[in-house]
Length: 157
Image 1 (cartoon, rainbow, N blue to C red):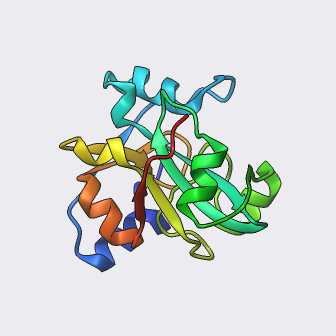
Image 2: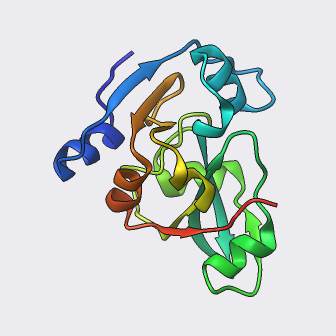
Image 3: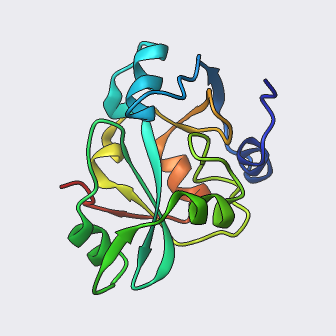
């Protein structure tokens, strides 16, 4: 597995320090983020999942702890939208250029507005998908926010 992806390249270009971690990706896992946390032996609250959604029909990226679910009303509010819904997997792959199970908030084919769950900002370090299945990036949540120019908002139900 290559440890160089568009996600790691984006961090390198931004001069942001990070580390990569690999794990055995299980394509049959019900919850990919939870499976990643278990495989790496870290608490699920610090393994953030990247979800692609639509707010008033426009693509957005949402980053939340893997053991939590996004509240659609909170997601819409974070982007100043009237409504929000999850993006279909095929559309998420088309917009990001990544495969489901390997979607990173970093280095997407077409950057979209991004929001990070506010509770994640209290962690010393977090993990986000590194742009391929079985690859995670460890970094400070403040560095992720800066790299993405992301909003911080309450997003979980």
